Length: 345
Image (cartoon, rainbow, N blue to C red; front, side, top):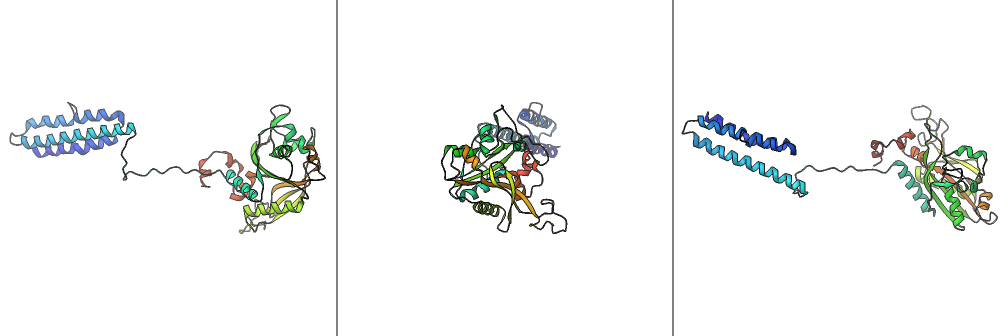
């Protein structure tokens, strides 16, 4: 009986330590009562000493006193630990597991927008910004889109009042800049724009970068040189660029700009022999619109079209990001899924 009692007493120490480690702060008092209370495990074992032979009691008593002191010490250490934690004074333990912080990442639209702006800034373009809520004059009329113009239907948008709306492009910053400053000037205007679209390939809000250069004797060949350099800086030196005639009310002549497909390298066919789904087998992907500034726009902002010429261009940031990073679904940009963004860390 003596041997068993000593074993049971000594076993209380690791059991008490384990119970303290697992218990929540609200459960600690119950753990103390279970082991150290008047009817606890230690008290029950010490009461059992009355059944021992008189010669065995001193030895078991010494073990019981040592165990009681050790349990009291563990309880005191637990209380001190809780007090330090509450005061934020926990001592540093180099052996504790390291906390790995969550590392964020820039959204792909932010990454590509910063990259495009950096390329154009190195060419001498200045970045400007302005309001997302615009007047009809800055958004349409000054850009050769008077009321009733059929081209407005392509940008049917979200109106606040009859003459105030959410801007449909960042071109109003071109108007604001030309009204505020005299040529020569070279600006880019990145930012959010809004249109009444919502389907698999369009969203009501997206991002654009508009560019404008006004100087004497600006030519279409200079526009081609700037845009070719931009595309090749973003997508690689081997990327080919072509211009197709088009129409925009605020430029004349106007052009759509295509680049060779990034997925099939402009062949129209993938390595597996299947037709390319990005360029639909043509080898080309449309990326932006551009042209020479229409003299009517210069007249609206008080710039002499006989003395000054210029070019303008505009591109969709999400479209460039989809091509740059191989993103197949526009909705991924707006679903706020951190797993999607972490891929770009």
